[in-house]
Image (cartoon, rainbow, N blue to C red; front, side, top):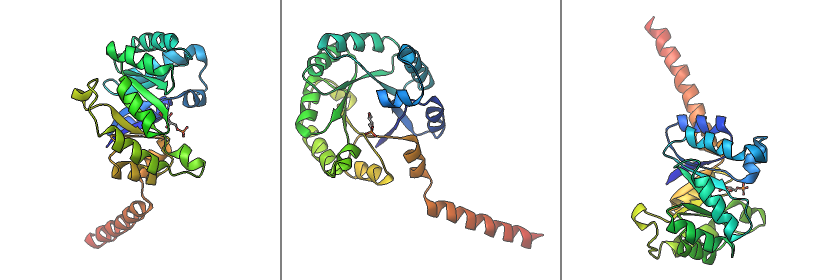
Length: 228
Ligand code: E4P
């Protein structure tokens, strides 16, 4: 499973990149708002992320509400950097936009996916990535990982012709809120998990690893003492 980072914060992106395991970045309007950025600075900020992450897929969300607007956004945003991916929410307007963009070779990440039929339609329309949300299901007392499993099993039953040679459409486990969500995503065979910075760090730093290192350090100190 590949790891994307779910943030628009450049410092977090740089740190995660330095760990050597990052395959992409996903942003959304809430994550951009958290950086304190303004609407006028959105495209410049996306360009900075794309430059910092050359070769990695960077998802930038369209604000458009119409098919034409989404196509226009897709064309304009994809001209910002070669590694940009256009994020569109699954809806009646975004399906034809996705098809047009896919025909032009523009990669779409279909977001806000909450059911297998939505994911199947996204795949058929030509989405390069499909993002079923886990955490928001859990928020309403539903079973987020169960829903993710249905999406993966349904989508992987078929070939679509759009991005098959690239191994697409790839399923991104999104709205990841815990280390356990990451484990569940991998157990279910998600292609990618997009993980917030703090959760990604928790995936590295298990408390028993921290404790184990402290014990080894103490024992090294004893050995060093004995040597003298
Ligand atoms: C990523 O593509 C999604 O926008 C993100 O994972 C949503 O996470 P949230 O449900 O925590 O807002």
